Image (cartoon, protein in one colour):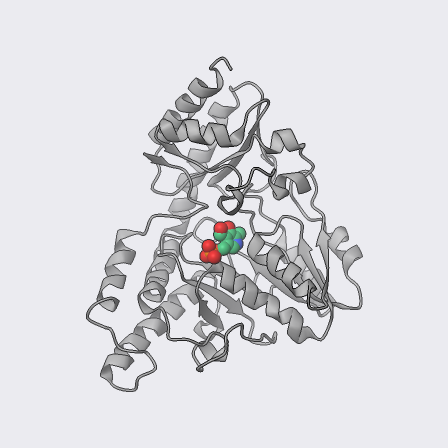
Length: 372
Ligand SMILES: Cc1ncc(COP(=O)(O)O)c(C=O)c1O
């Protein structure tokens, strides 16, 4: 099977699995316990905190572990509640774990405005500037998009927010391990990460916090994670996330170079397929993501046919692939319903090879050239 669905999730790295194992067996203590069993586990969590912190260039006390990217995004959006203001600005192509939480908050009195994107998926600085008003308490714009791979100019947008004293959150779930992500260089106040997109297990993520922006916990209980995420820690997953972050940092340059080479080969080959478009190919994107549109093709049917040929890809985002609605991301970028419904997303992993890319293209060409 050729696995090209790495934006949905990634395989656990064997070294990550190895690092986790003792914390599922030997080291079972509760990290809040003061005895040796607890202290060993607590030390492992603090090491993981340092490893995640190092990946995004912050100090360990800025990392709050959560159950994943969704919870991290939800927790970051609680900054709107603490801001004392009522308006939230969010990108038009945000992941549902941002957009649905903002919609939920709007039921409790918040007003939100979506920041429109251009046909490349980018939010212009003047669009943000024009949308900010005296009641804006939080701005949330993703670092890179899970469907198209488009990378926003976050530092420029966040600088504007800083000048106006408005908290800025970015969802960097898809970016870590693929491109450099430096929390401080980006000028942001809050950032969300997820383990399973970077070869750690599912069910672990983190908020990166500037320690100035006020947050309110989603859960109420003990004092774990500085009181912002109470509940006994998912120790093995946190340890795994730490190890994955360390590997991602060590191997970032070679991973992104490898992904970029694969992406170049893929898109060069795809250029030869009639009626095929790679979304936002002219702007900065993640080196692993190619969103493909094709005239007169049903993306979901194509996905099933590719599955039969041993290729795993996704049509649009995994979270919306159960519905037959066109991708809201592609709609926001101005694509027609029929073209948006043709979308398939190829998301490569650093474990993939050039031969797999070539085999995928052969399989795709075989399917789309079939008489309908
Ligand atoms: C951009 C983005 N944000 C957030 C999430 C949610 O992360 P998790 O699956 O860890 O809840 C995803 C997962 O698909 C994502 O792609």
